[in-house]
Image 1 (cartoon, rainbow, N blue to C red):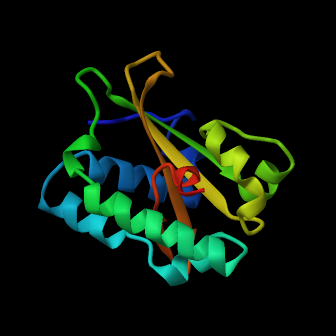
Image 2: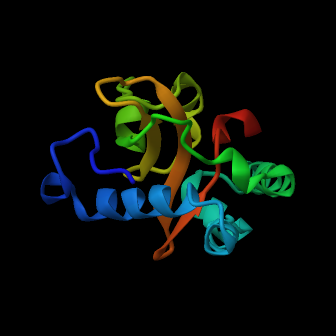
Length: 157
């Protein structure tokens, strides 16, 4: 089981980072609960309205999310053998707009102007001990009092 993250331990994680860790660990189990969790993370149109600034962009993002989940394979969200640690990274959308990106794929920077301000987008990465390279999954965002997961959302645009 995973026991570490980019910081030294859970005591140094912010509350939302603890939730991201919990989600990441649950998804990699590839069981019925993981499938139900992934289903609960699907973004609706109303969620997309809270992520991007225009209704047109929300519509585009929502259509992309629907296609992504239609093709989603829960078994693709897992750590490879030996990847026993977890790294959590995030970026505030306001910082992305200013050109600062702390670990998310570059695609997020390319669509930064479309985001509403002050949202935090999270990524998690399963890695081997001592490594920063591993299976990364991005696009977790907390809106409307719940988590939604739109992997690689920049591809919508």
